[in-house]
Figure 1 (tube, one colour):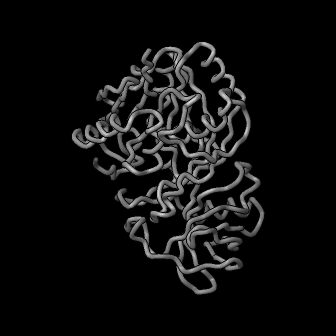
Figure 2 (figure 1 turned 90 degrees about the vertical axis):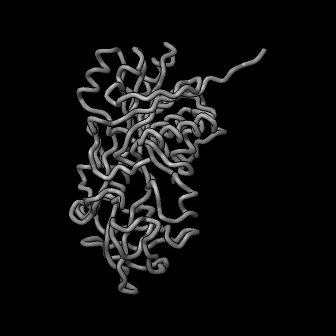
Figure 3 (figure 1 turned 90 degrees about the horizontal axis):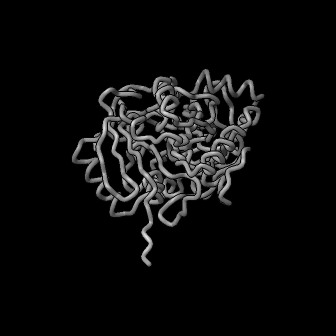
Length: 349
């Protein structure tokens, strides 16, 4: 696959690979998405806006430069922004691949970081020296102002120029709670939503704190995704209940939506309210809520790819990889798309 190197959300030539429930593979222009949906489908998207979650500064005990990438928090409450889990990086910028970045200075509880106008205390170093719990000083207003003034969206080496914050916001972006963009939602536009409505496709949203896609460290990457809070509105829970009653498909826009709905719906019903998704979805997962996922293309071995194994067999996904490669699909956040229907399980009597 080809790494998408320009921050263009809705390319006119974008492609969409479709995996049908019985394993067949089709190639479509992404502009045909609405035609692939069924009347009465419910499409659920993540409306999280992306935080400027990359903060450069200084580790005060050593005077060394450090980049902090915010990676998790316990709540979506905008007043609770003092504490974040974070991953540390050493010197360098987005032109250096994440896995090639130098190591950060060794930190210890009680160390202070100066991140532009923000001062932060290392409260805890987890069982990996680059994974820390960070507490920011000041009021919620001060912290939000510091993020806005000094923070940048997390950058990608495969994108040729620095990303601006608006490059990472989907058209439906609302509360700024994502650490990296819920990029499957880049495919949406108001025209697309209008066409879906005319076709009889229902649309709903939830808010999920999309986390880091890579830490540059194999051990840390193996722990992804980290725990991620979400909020399901009353209207969305009601839409899901209606879809279930009429045996309609629930189509998730992005892996974050799959994770939130499957965590909330462990008992088969999706309640409204807040929660924290703690599970990993993979080949052993029995999907109770979601019937299909619209996603970007993901490389084998990533947590996003592992989630696809809950929808399709390893054999089918291997054929998908071959097709993505041979047809020149673009990968990563600004790349092409896939639509994967949950596999039909054959029963032999």
